[in-house]
Image 1: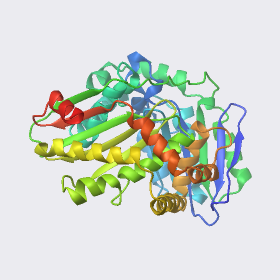
Image 2: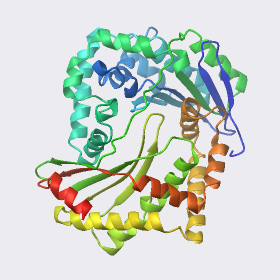
Image 3: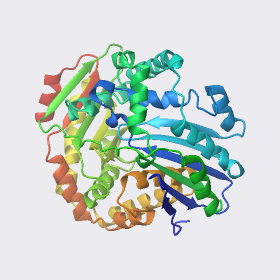
Length: 424
């Protein structure tokens, strides 16, 4: 499978289509992806990208209500859903390969022929508000929102990708229609298919069901500008049994050597139970059950983060351990054995994931939308192989030379305490 490459074509209306043949696979996964996520919103439209994703499932020209729409997939034992992020929106379905045409039919209905029924707007306002409240009641999730507020002030990323409760109240039917008309066009979407199908049949189905998708104005996401000053924000909440810490740094452009080096650094620093932070914070000091680092590099933003939760009276000691780990990765090359083990682990994880058609379809929808032309999974593995120990050290020095943005949720800590712990 690893030596297989997808067939890629562009329809006359600008829709890019990729088909990855997976011999012997009984299921087929189809992904539709576009830059019509929250970053495509106007300042007066906060939350509308996610809101429209919900509305797409409320009925289409062919299946005029949510029950008849969902029945097309559910009655065949398949599943389908949508997801809206800060950069993109995705609609996807997974079915048995004999039912693949149903998948093309339903997904095309969602984006080409949505009804956007006005009488369902209030219902979705209620549903989405509950979704937002659930997130706000989860410190592990809400702290990520606080970190974006610190990292990207006065920009779309500062706000929740779903919008906040007042934003949802302001959304009207006409603004949903305007958002759809402005952003939902064939040239702003990519279609990725993975399964054991006839190649010509896949492209014939794409043509049959998406030829009517209009061509429109291309979405150009604004580049986000990260904060450069040292900032701390502590959000106080009662009845917490620990303090939650989220430390962020700006990263690099996607699909560059620096980004691959930083991704590997994330594994070294806090990728698993063998990582440096896990050893220093949990195994040696017993401060936290779990601590992790993560690196996200998207078209319009890039963040390296460290996240954990500890007893409030242990925060100062925790910060000392995190700074100790940062000092190590910015002054010492990884030893050769650990470096080779890391590369082998990343390669193995990638190969394991490539055994799933749903992962391949999702991956290629991401590549097709965001990566340089011709980029594929073999390119990805080659770029990982080319990263050296010095590249990782250089990336660490560059990232950690910046001022961090530190978000904290706790019962009684304050900004000045956290600043003093970090600057000590």
